[in-house]
Length: 312
Length: 281
Image (cartoon, rainbow over all chains, first blue to last red):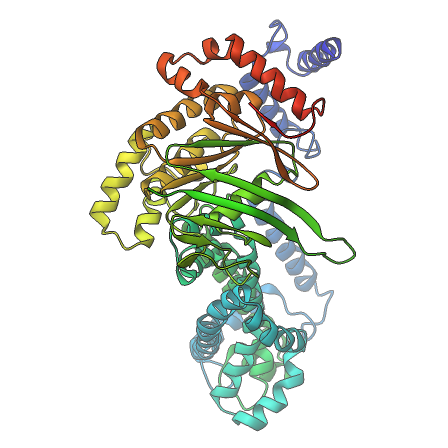
């Protein structure tokens, strides 16, 4: 046992010697120095696989790489379109798309400016999001806490959750008409399921010891639900909210297919009917950028609200 | 002054899918009085934690009854119960504080908020509960850590917070489920001394679970040895090593005394199955 570990140590030292002669004269390298040495190696040799070092798989800062890869992508796009390899009807150049974006922003498209389209869509999405959270979070937590509520709601949720919103859109229109309420309801329904399910999953992530200790300190059942379970479920709830907003954006275009006068999804659909590829792409980029920004905001909120995530 | 009385208690976990019903505890009789520090010792699966859960009121006995003073303890919620003998049926409550092996602190609260949590649940005003919590944090040596996040503390400190939190609630009885099991030897010794100090000062009933024979001998006024399948109490010892320790404050001296060593040998041989039958010391 002892011999083995000594050889292992000798091995490491040998490695250090070959890679960092500066430290080679020291017989024993303290852990801190070893770590520093490793981190230096990591920078100088990015090809080394994760897992060879002490860090978790995939550890490291990837932001710079993301910026470069995005710019590269746009560069290739610009290159192939500006060189005339592709008919602008199929793919306009990024500069044309940007020009079109400014056009829409200033003078509008399909009867409204970009801001008006956008505010119509954002109202729908965040209105639906607000109600989905208002109903979904408490309901999910209560479903997680009560086998009776779980029995009642589980089949309903599990049944409608995988349905594509387009499939029940006609029903909603028949029931609610073609105005704002049907659009919001469609988005609301798409968001509700992930919020309920994540809140429910959050309940099960609360450790039984935390609940038992609360009871042993005189908590009532209601206090346990509101002060232990609801708070313990918060990380999962926030994840569910992020997923829900994503669902909201994917459902938006479907919601704005019928009888919309405004909306970024409507704008894209309308442009596609007139083969205005540049407007379609500009609209898609606007949706993507806003959705991404909101996701960043949610991640920021997550760090602020649940700094203890993963420490439960 | 209350007494905890456990009479002819059995716990049978119903058969789960494809399995058989498991008798976790069989015919347990135990009385814990004011000032008793009862330590339960035994191999894994002998029902120590089940016994603690019964006393805490997390589960209900399948047979027999538990009383604390005039109240009958029953599991909470909605678990089939045995006889109904007390004036009042109680589930888990603030009169029986619990400390688990892995701390069960709430990570969204800081140290002092965790400590005052029980008082807050009972509607004690903020100023009063802060003072109380600060007092107990001082007792466990964490007066400089009021606003630390609990997940940034070491394991030993987390357990101190857990103990302070249980004490701040001023329970009649403290239930400790291997509270020191996950700690290093030094931290463990200092917390053993802390618990004995608390015990001596408050004269509370304590029920303490451990795997460690040394720990059991050092802490217990009464040591119960349990054996598995079905879980039952096979031996009981009345001990005095904790008072010896409190008198001299030298764990090594107590542990190297002849009486300590011979008792330890006896208990080890029981645990390893050399001795059978019902006998007490």
